[in-house]
Image 1: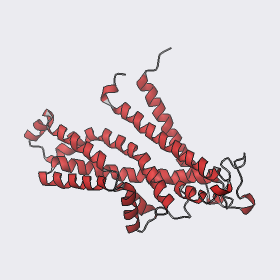
Image 2 (image 1 turned 135 degrees about the horizontal axis):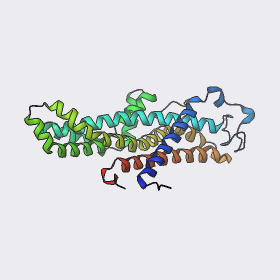
Image 3 (image 1 turned 30 degrees about the horizontal axis):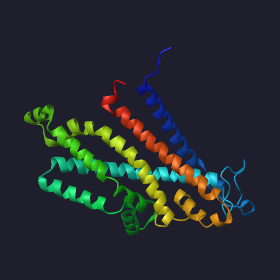
Image 4 (image 1 turned 30 degrees about the vertical axis):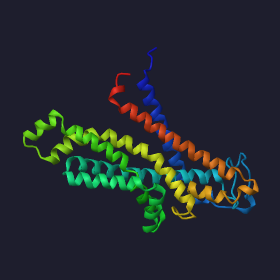
Length: 274
């Protein structure tokens, strides 16, 4: 029987985690509003076979609300991470290819954004844009691009000194042609891995901002809102209303972080022969 090497196991594990994340997202999307509607006859029930996560003070099933909240978190995290990764690639490439003044301005902007606590900046941006889903995505996207932008800048500076780039420039190729055909293909792995590694940070920020009341509206079944509502019930002994949704959020974040780490190792050329 042929032995599966380490790289094949990593790819199999990565595909499995991606399928699990897709299943969580799909199940949350397919949950109807009737399944998360409250009933005072079922209020404050502890975990049981009919309600695996119990019910809240309004009789709403916490398992279904948690799944629906996770789908919202995945949507916000994916959208914010994608926008942030695009900003990072554009800013990093512009800093490396542009003039010294452009490089100085972008570097100053990166230092400025990184110098402000993310939570405060997200709250300010979200509040300025009217809160809600769009404001939250804009706030998270505007604060998570800096580290990847620095990585892209260093990568582009290294690519500029490569021989094939110099030959292409001597052949009369334009800067846009060199960027599209020689640099962006090399930046694709950094873009993909950076996007996935920003994913869990975006989800945690979405949950924390919603928990503080500056993110999604209260009627939205988000994890941060579920945890915020559970704080009023802990003194009554309803431990399940905070512990189980919180643990589910932690497991989701750890799974995405592990997925990003595995993908980084798969795309790493140094591990290609393992």
